Length: 112
Length: 117
Image (cartoon, rainbow over all chains, first blue to last red):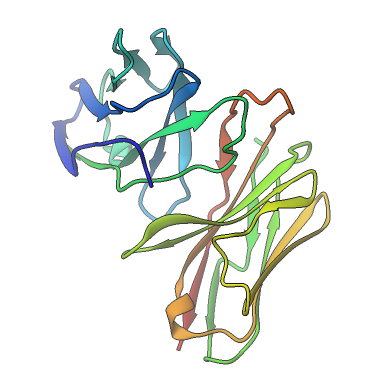
């Protein structure tokens, strides 16, 4: 079972920032926090991952709480193309859990 | 860009027929995953290979499903005989993992939409 809790849905306006929350209160010290998204009629797509420090890449930023019990995926300027289901997933190191365990995710709608 | 490819993209078949889905992982990747997605169950793992060896196929109905990697460039998922409840989108993903095992990202294919009537 997924060990994360996310809101079922969120709405955003185009060109505004979006903060997608994820709670993982039972996270262990070796769990990495991964985010994937799934656009309509496509396979899931890797977005970002982190362990303790905040992370940035070309797609998004990941803010991790100091106690690591929650994290937030930040899309700095939402576009219509960002409308997707976003999954927050915990993955263990050193890779004992190779597969991804998907929960229900957050369905993000972006309004023009 | 390197991509995972899957064939066929769509398959409609009758109950009882054999179905074979194929996946070409990204060159150089050493792990391959098969996932199934339905509205009711969401995304769930069926099988997982590392260096072509099956590591986990506990998510597969063993009596009708089989997954293989004949070589490093091809993974197959077969259903025989197919049933209407097998209707779903089947995704293949590949990744690169080492024994020291920092979890790395997985790259998903576009999926095969299977309809069993």
